[in-house]
Length: 519
Image (tube, rainbow, N blue to C red; front, side, top):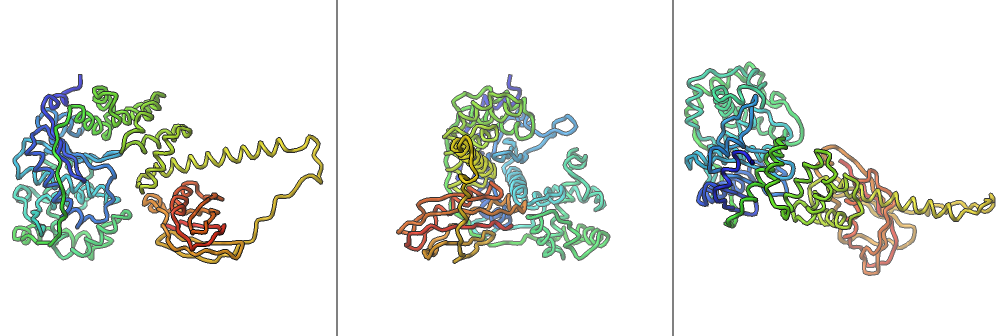
């Protein structure tokens, strides 16, 4: 038994997709096309304008438009052991994100829900910290947006929220700021309507009132670290509360939309029918993302073994359960175009570093500039193991070459490190380099490829240094490369992958490159 979520699988599923979004719908093709159009409009006209710094996942977000109420209820979030009735929600995942939408709402309402949930998607990926009032307030604010070909109209009034403000008292700001996703005001329908209305009105006040510029500085600060709103506003809590109450009574009912000119980009739509197991796979991933592992496992059991995407998540669940069979699932998943590098990283974490396809998948992902830090960590682990094995081989070889009765005279001191002079240096953003040579051959760099410095390592302020000896050919290409040291190991592959592509002045030489990663 798959539970009530299987009911929607009795309906035919259609997939409508672009380069940015995948919409899977059991509510009909027309509804799916409308949702994709609104997703693209929001993404290209509002998303890129407002959340330009957001680092979105490499895998496209999937949007499920559910055509029956029972399945929507089964997928709905829970509060105190009970399902919370929602028309849609955003679910952040491990490898991709999801939006679940009710397919049986009025078209105009669906538009607002799409904009609301997509705002959560951008906020989740753009801001380090998202207080509940800010998360829901911005989502409600952008839910009322009107998107046209060359303009976005912001700041529209929500009749539903205005009615709630007229019929309910405002929460004191101290209590309002303390509400989080576990609070009754966030989950119980009557209280939540008050919180959502006040969140929308408060963000409207901050965006269009006297604090507009300071509020934008606060949002910008949240993209890099935790920040306090009062550190950026020129008002204390009592003055802010008085100003907000006056705004709600006097200015908000008279507010007019503000138009922002934008330039959209062309996009294309692909429509296709999909088999039931594609929908089951997405539902299983949603359950996995929100921690409902048993439900995820039951849905994966209904998916054929030939689907490599399912193999990867079977491996994830098996590894969580301590099942050694996870290895076989991840090996099958190496063939998946999107999840293959992630499966390779999982295998490395389990100690499987000798499978050629694992190294290939990781190196290909690194060369393509993946933003997944697990890929670079796995490559660093493989490299460290390579170095360990080489050192062990050398040690054993040296042990075998030692005479049975060693004589002090027969022990040779290691050759002294040759003297090298620095002849060039430079920097690009957070990456600095030096070129050193022990001879008169000192080729200049003609084309520099900056080593990738993943945002995850920058945010953790992880510094590093990599020392590499390279052989430059008469054509100025890098023909040989010897890693001297890498501290820490994670930077080794980042540096060597870039240096391999450097172009030098046409001059044969052996030089040393020192690369520093400075956060």
